[in-house]
Image (cartoon, rainbow, N blue to C red):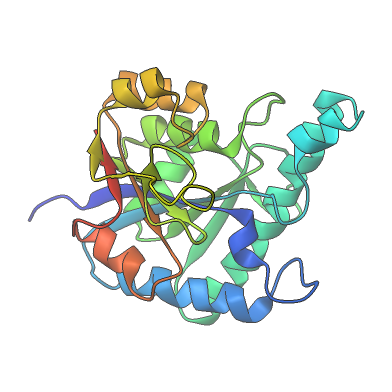
Length: 237
């Protein structure tokens, strides 16, 4: 029996917000949970998930507006925990055993992140949601994705974008002649300063041989397709 493929899915916090002023839209969260379930039901994956907190709070933006950076970042980490709990609830409602593990110590609502415990949960076919960032300020959830992927031995990070179908040489919303890349190397991402993820995360993926697939999560079935290895979006290797 072949070992299961271990993956990390990185979701933007904005993907959990709905129309109007809903910061966390239960219906949207449930839709995402069903998309994840389609991939989980393939039966050959061990899945970790990381959710950003941008729908609630952005530490960098708050810092730029005068907040002390460390405090602003810790507030962002708490936002990721709120999103993780919302997604955990939606996944468990549809029958998938899930664990939220937090880098910040909040035992009343989430298990503390311990690498061996995370591996044990994955091996028991539980989806693990990694919350609380790295537990340190000045690091993004992109860096958390790269770090956790390296720690648990994930083969690939699936970067599920909210309305962006891959990596472009410039912003396709502003430039009609923007070119989409089908494939890129980690080195090219760093050299071209493409805004796939922050440079710390990109360097971590490069050093640890972790592939990245950037794709649009708003098209139904894309999470399952990418998890199966279909050529969607942009592959970074």
